Length: 355
Image (tube, rainbow, N blue to C red; front, top):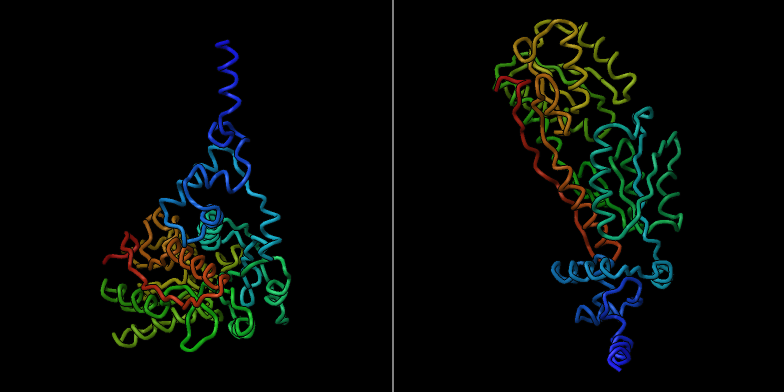
């Protein structure tokens, strides 16, 4: 009898309370375990900010514990959403640049983390405009994505503005112009350029060169800031274009530095990658950094601290920027307003300058 009663008690136990994997099948089951409504469970599993962090994490932990997987396809059909975010890198001004560029990889990594934490998949596209202006409309009008993130404006500012006038769930990493339509998260590039040149001048540099292709809006603005700082200090600043395509950058910089006035004692590089290439070239030609030439980069990529000597640079808050981009995109997907964010650059002092 005892064995029979034990078996009856086991059979009468609520299935959702046993903790066995596979027995929690619906949102209502999770809601009962968590002591909340099914709607709260749905919002928590979708990463909605309407549910506080503690409750959201408790619900997710219960879902993991019981092996619960919501019917995502049915949910997407009901909401008319795909659960996919398009990430586009337009390369109108530098068509040979690759997604393997360390800046792209760093920002993409942070974006992927933020998007997957929010329950989205990512669809990546490298767009080469080649005289056409529909590269962005092909993505936004595809019906395959719930929103779009653009990494860099390249020379495509007007195209992005035109699409943003009618397509709301769009956020861009780049430069913010007063009165523009599209939502941007990025660094104050002009302030960063001023900060870079001012640091070299304060560290004793008296003849500067700017290395970077200014046909893209971000680097053009960095050059404008550096030129303003040099002019204010009465220090000459020359400019040599250096592209961002890996196979061409080294030879371009070697040729530029071989021809430059030996009196040049300070290099403002438009990016860390350009600065790293210049460091190697200076080493190969027997010029010491920072004794003969000081050099400063822009980005503060993880690699910047690993060069010899470690690279002084202007820091962009890439991880924070990725988080803010995803926050703004999610708000716009929900029909809410989300405004541009311009972050302040920060000087990171290392051994490639004397200051």
